[in-house]
Image 1: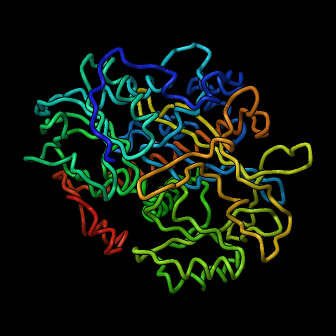
Image 2: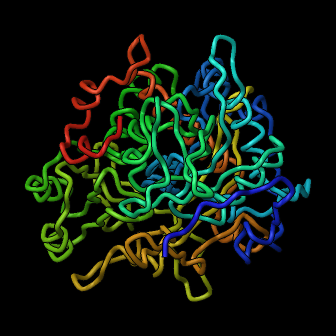
Image 3: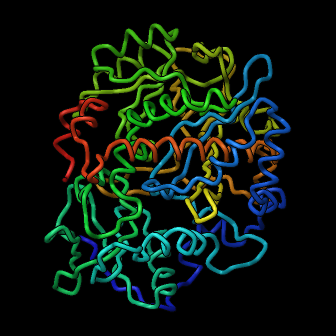
Amino acid sequence: MHKESTLVSPGSFNNEHHWYAKAQNATIHPMVNYFLNLDQRRIVSRYCHLHPRVNRERLVQLLSYRSKFFLWSGADLFNATSADGNRQMVVIENNSCPSGQKSMPLLDDNKEEGTYRDLIERTFVPFVKTKRGEPKIDGGLAVIYDKNHMESSAYAAIIADVFNENVVLVPSLHGEGPERIKILDGLVHVHHDNEWQPVRAIFRYLTQKPWNRLPIHSKTKILNPIVACLAGGRNKMVAAKAYDLFNSELKSYGLSINAPETIWDISKEEIPLWVKKMGGHAVVKIPYSNAGQGVFTITNESELNDFMSTEIDYQRYIVQSLIGNYNWSSKGTRGKFYHVGTMPSKNGSTYVADIRMMVSSTAEGIKPLCIYSRRAAVPLTENLDQSQQSWSMLGTNLSIKTGENEWDSDTSRLMLMDRRDFNKLGLGLDDLIEAFIQTTLSTIAIDQMCQKLFNSKGRFRMKLFKSLNNDSKLLEEILQ
């Protein structure tokens, strides 16, 4: 049965509906609370103290950056180290319109709406406000989503409160009718109560191929705009190129985005050659998938053969160095990195865990919003045998696809930033600062790629995008 659009009224927010049960009564860890309340000056001072080659003035500029397109992001990072103990946070991907609020314990100030409200007040409200020289658009407000009703409905309720007007909450599932979105004269309209209603601004939580339901160009303001996904927020191919370009600028300032070694624009036939070059251990990714879909960890011939026999519509892939245990990680140009992992359990088991750092662009720069972590299903082993499936040791995403457009979450592997779980991650304050700076740098890289993809007249440069990502199947999907 298709879900219907609903009208969300001011005063309807109920926090029991918008957090995982295990997060509702969790008490935030003091160190995480302290980090989220650090001002920029102290973050910069601490980071430059530990990284004396970093240019302080440039770091201040970067943390004060105001995004033009990529205003809300969530990076997934691995805490990795080398044999020499060179620890670093590695950016695996940076997601446009990320999840995470439902996994975040309330901060010590006990705001009932948590950091949901922070995102709306700091970022969405200034974005929607009509600026000098902009035409005034008549229409309502909408939240459009394809999964994660728990968070999407929370945002709708808070937007209704903040703007003191009703908000239409619109489900829009990839490949599934009925049609609930259409574009008339450049303005997005949503279907509700048997009529089409114009919308002046949209808070978007479309994650599955959002570019085939919403246009790149629109009179309606959309946060995040579709270009944020195409330029890296839902496109791992272009993200890798954005990081590479930005790193060439950052190098002289002692800064860099730490990312796995990435080979891009790979055809399926070439993949075995690159896997072999990386020592038989690599990660193959469909660049435009998310929620743990389209990621293949390759550690033996069986896993490679399984991937090669998979029917996939797209034509281009990326291959990345694999971060595993020291004995079976890929050796890249920067050496071999492996997972720090969780603190050992009582039986000595260490698990792979990632960190999701959500941030948004504000008038004062990029600021952290919330953090959570996820661990793999089974412990990391020192040595692999050919019968083991590496994904169960390395995959951390909680999303479970139960149908074409149906999703569930394995919350048993969710690790909160609370007094109980945080200590298991073995993280310190400096790790959180490093994760924030890596998230900020990768966000800026994608935002700058967004800007490169528009000409001086504000039109999307499709020829340039095609040169960056020449995948005919993807190009056919993009709604202009």
